[in-house]
Length: 114
Length: 116
Image (cartoon, rainbow over all chains, first blue to last red; front, side, top):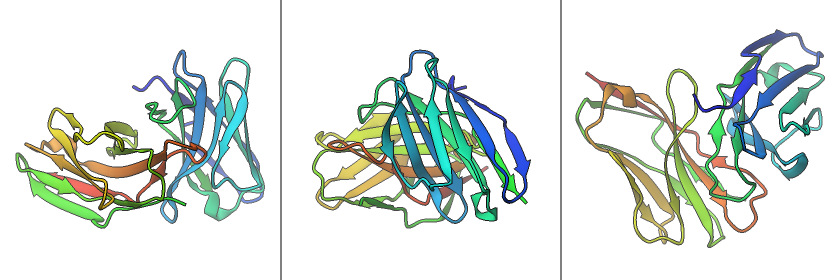
């Protein structure tokens, strides 16, 4: 158990819908990262937040957005869902936003778009 | 942009054997970090070992060690005395140390199967 929690574990929805994935970082960690793992694209970095502010952006689609709240939990919002958005979405946390800080991964949310 | 290549989609070895997983990367940066992550069937991502590019000494963590060849941009993982619990996907990852604006860049992974 990494100490990072993600809800829900599984999510099944239809094309065109909007979903919210939630992540609670380890106690004391200020940085949250979101990653997408799909068969086509592999593991891709989406976005990073540090203490409530966006710090880095990766291959995140415009239909996707995220935020980190004052209690440090983070949410990833996916809208206008397409079949290709079906993937495992990981949240990871680390103490700081600096490189070489070990990122602790949550168990992931499996999103299936039908 | 940095790229990470793992050329072995799948490997299979007998329990107690030693196995080496390959990883090459491409970057123009001089300050960076390299990682190996393990993803067992549970899908949990677990850090196995990491290497700072400025360190010449290869990192070691118990049965896991790396062979870091900076000039060749190669970062292989050696697993000694392999165990059934080592069966997993293994991902090589890169992190830019100067401008960490892209999170971790992962390779496609190697599926390692340890046979009893």
